[in-house]
Image (cartoon, rainbow, N blue to C red):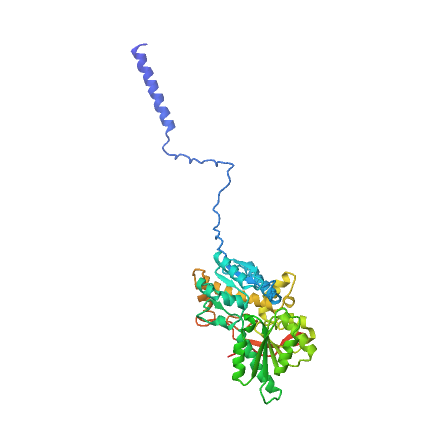
Length: 422
């Protein structure tokens, strides 16, 4: 190839290169945006789960009931009422969102068994305890104070109001001593209203136990201070009749007889009194002033007076509504179960109120804080089941008032407003 031909080829290649560059590099048009096709996979779409509040710790409470012992006739419905309240409260959110974990057992009215169960439940971490009888509650009070366990029982012994000996015991019902004083005072007034110028003679016949003896000394002191002749005697355990005891009271000349016992032996006494023609007026303190007595004694119960701190279903009040609704939802009714069921229900309700206040104040749920919270309760309403409940740091006497009832036509009918022993 000649030099002339090489120059010509070079010129042609240079021209082609310039043309190609011009075509591939426009200056007036922006590059088109690049979009990416969605990537499809079989993996699930992950979304953020809503925040779920962790369950709150349950509140452990211990309890003993007499279901098979000497006071089982009244102990059974009382225990049923307490357990029913726990079930009802848990179904309605518990105590400020905490469920109640109730550990309970039948102690058959045996003090040693009560002590064993109390120790077991405290070791298991209960922060409060629901007891039953006078003998076991009084026996436990020193241990209760040492353990700092708030304690409510079905015993209304005035000995439990000693703030030095029993700083963690709380009474919901009117004390036996207050009941005895109210009964003696009513006897004096009733005797005068019948036109008598002198003072009546009063006898107390009682269960042969610390429970039975509890009101005797205070009732005697009040009677004698008011010029009333007074005597007391025990009802032998397992007795098949009380004819001998009726004879003793007849010899004494008793115009009024106060019964401090549970329903079954009291009913037997009333039937024997009717058979023997014993004409004194009977007054039952709370543990025999119930529907069980009327059922067992029949016509012999007519006219009996009762000092009743817990309003019976025969005189309906608003505080009966929830336990009655719960019972009806479970195939029964408060009219069938009786006043001791609502008594157990409302006793647990008061303890629950103390625990609720601890939680509302943001404090640790322990015995000391529950005690302080209970002591802050003033005029707690039970819907008319009891007089309003109040405690204080220097007094755990929650209720000093009650209403008098009388058996008329086979039911307890209210015959007074709330009466105080003070």
